[in-house]
Amino acid sequence: MQSRIDSETKLTVFRVRREMPNVKPEVLYNNFHDADYRKTWDANMLAGYNICVLNKHNDIGYYAVKFPWPLANRDFCNMRAWMEFTNGEYVIFNHTVPHADCPPQKNFVRAFSHITGYYVRPFGNGGSQLVYVTHSDMCGAIPKRLVDATLNQKVPEVMTNIETCATKYVEWSQKEYPAGHVHAWTTPKMDWNNTSKHYPGEETKEAEKLAMSSITGTPGVPVGSEGASAFSGEPNADQAARIKQLEEELTNIKKRAMLDLSGGVDGNSIVRSGGGAISIAPVSPADPTDAPSVQRYRALMNDATNSVDRLFIQEGRVPTLREYMERLHFVLEGVRRTLPAE
Image 1 (cartoon, rainbow, N blue to C red):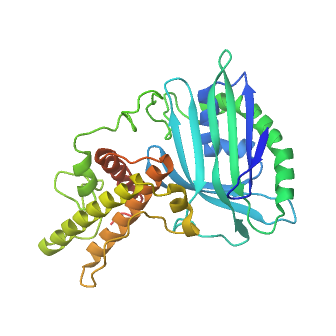
Image 2: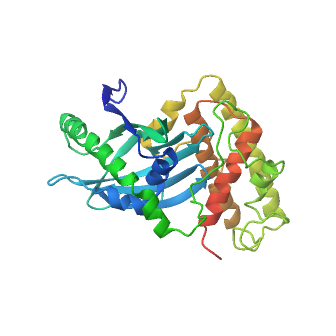
Image 3: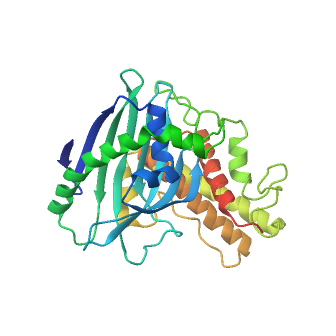
């Protein structure tokens, strides 16, 4: 176990490496993902659930953790990202984000994860090597020295518990899931050495068209389970024209923002600024004469583009237009699936 003080946050970053010769990488990866099974090995977990799915590699979820008396329990609202690789490696990492459906809870202190996660890779003959990293602020009035001392003591114990429970995951899952079951978090495996594909299996020449039209109910593009518009009623000619204008404004804003990003904007400061809504591009000006459906469209598109911004800021690179539009489509699809049925 290693640790160092982060120069910016003044918090301790912990890094643990653990070899697990009797646990296959895929099994360990599924063990971390499976919230139902986590209840069997995470004794400190009070609650955990998914808030929304952004795309096949990212979601936002809630996690509440029990703290020893007399300290108040902590909870997190985190965006999680995961990837599977062709060489047998896996990654799952998260960081804290704000979300309207995850406000601070009564009797909990909202904690903050700067980055926390797992890197799993093959080890020995069918075993795994786990690298665990956590850089988190428990917030509240807990002295930093007490937090560090507790983590130094507890993290190795948690690693042992994870290994013990992971060896039992296959047997447990065979009882819980039918034969041939494919987990919801399973994705096509990526090649570390192939940078031309960022989301394999999701390529389509229609991605740009789908991204801009799926939210408006354009004919031929399935929006709901029956192809209906996500909003109540179809936009009339004036509303459709206004939506098109908003799309053009958003596109122009995004191009300017990406040029700024490539010119040296500090992505990290953008992500952390204020701890509230995060954006590298302002929403287009509101018009009080807009119909409610147009206003909802503007708000939804702004939230979606903010989510995509975060992804590329975290990666520290400027995307191509196709990459950006593909991810925007995935985010909008995730939002669509969370909308209540009309």
